[in-house]
Image: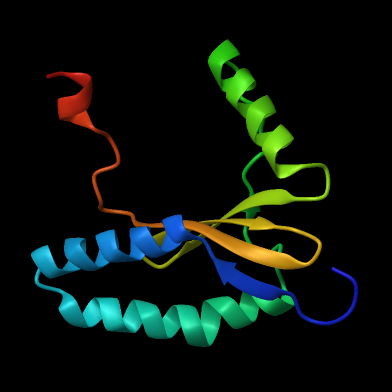
Length: 125
């Protein structure tokens, strides 16, 4: 980023993730928490990304050890291109995945840390 603020965009996947987080919080009886999350994203997270886009950890800084991990790592690097970085920000109960490009920050995914992250039925029918 050279002078000024970057624009922050939300991917379609990020918006779907927000819907999933809302359903998760509703099921947990924490509907006010979702409103707080949206307010925090709008008033704190987006302004921080506009000014300090590399605030999150570089997700690709640690190369994986397995052959499958290295192949996926190479694929992600190829998709991102040489000028972009994939980053992760842990903020309160949420994990945000985003990419920093020369002209924008793109929000890719968000997840509540207590959401089940593995598809157990899919792995063990």
